[in-house]
Image (cartoon, rainbow, N blue to C red; front, side, top):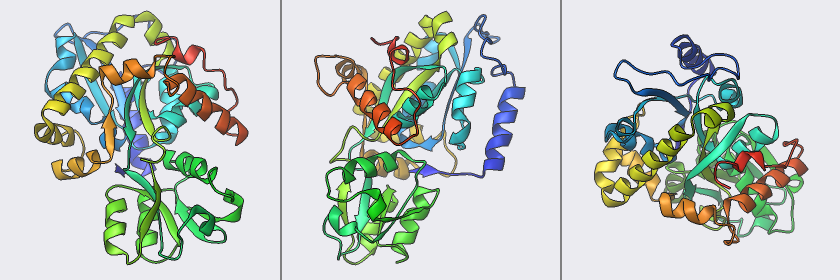
Length: 335
């Protein structure tokens, strides 16, 4: 579940952030970390309205950042087209967004490093179709609505690799917003759509014969989210990177032990999002804490983060969306 706002409002938010002194417009802006009046190190992290990032609000409300000497500024910025510029210029220190866009941004020159994986979709995203479409092959000649800017597009293309058809065999309708794709399907305007919760469950419950051809549970490595950091800032402030990792891990541990309380804390940082919204989203998400991230960076595991991201980079290079597949420097903080 992501909530979009207008690009104009997003631009205003970005300008306000820069005027407030969250970072300079140059990539050499981190000579030292600034301090708040309380002697805490000021740190900014940005992400859009999405439940996968919401444990950050648990960490903030429970004082995990403050305990580690951090004065955290969490910025909800819906215009994801600005992310590569913001993290590269140093206008934000940390960025949370989907894994495959991060790989593409890095491959196209964004100066950032991988910190950790925050969550992965294990059923929260799906390809929903009408009753007459019983397999991926049946999509041939049909109209599928989706958002090509979302990670669910990567999931869709990877799923098609297990069929006898390609994207060229389908009438793909790029809605520019996954919610709009879901609404189009429920309105009977398209034959199938990629959507996520809560529209996914709503479509399955409200449209006669609607069913999920595939979900992210079938492709658990396709849709995930990661935290990245500006390269220069990471090099000059390694202790802050470690502190951010620790605060995140503590937040995930708290969520695992106190889910009901966590829903309230997670909803508190977003506008027009309720604890019930968060709870529903969490049914299709898995948050990754200390042990899960340790397993991801263990090269002995075949499904490690290095292989997952390398597959993404090579996939998007083949699509003409990624200039470089060399992720060596992207992983220097964890490898």
